[in-house]
Image (cartoon, rainbow, N blue to C red):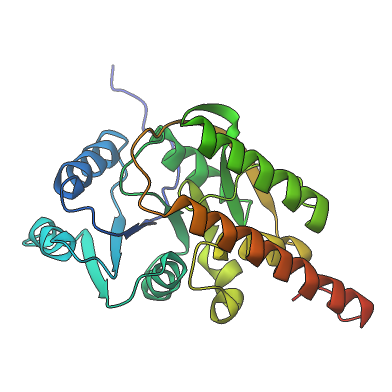
Length: 250
């Protein structure tokens, strides 16, 4: 007896995987291969990876270009100055697809976040992967700094989200593009984008993730902490002035 005709298959919208990178030549090739294998195993057929080197001084660009040679799934952008926010803005501006998944190149999170976030972007404009509500293996000082920053963000901006790191975030390009020109060149762009989008009525979802990140940070943690808390205070001040003037939002 012949098999009945197959029903309609679920739609798989294409994805952009956006990866900022700074001095990651030692892990780049292996982790790009790991991403490719994961996407193939999950039957993600239409995707692009955009790797943006922001001021790398090692062989990150050369290693990335070697990974891209003869392939169409990886685009390499080399910026001459450091700044992860600058890398995000450049990558998002070049993205072909509306669904954009942002990952750290060290791939310290469970890569199932890609499929979960992509599915949520059917109804959400931003998806936040949260280490705080999931599980994490990180140094105590980084966990303490993150908890303090989240508490300050909740107090100053009234936001209830629990992760403002760079990786494990997903965006509808069409929803966040209006904010690009005003975003910071450093890591403060994440909280800016979430705060402004939230004020503008965007749909923001948060899901727990697993993270094992015990590598030495590429950031100077003291300088980065001062920068993030200083940027948070400036954002609070801007929002307060807007409310007092009756402007509302960014």
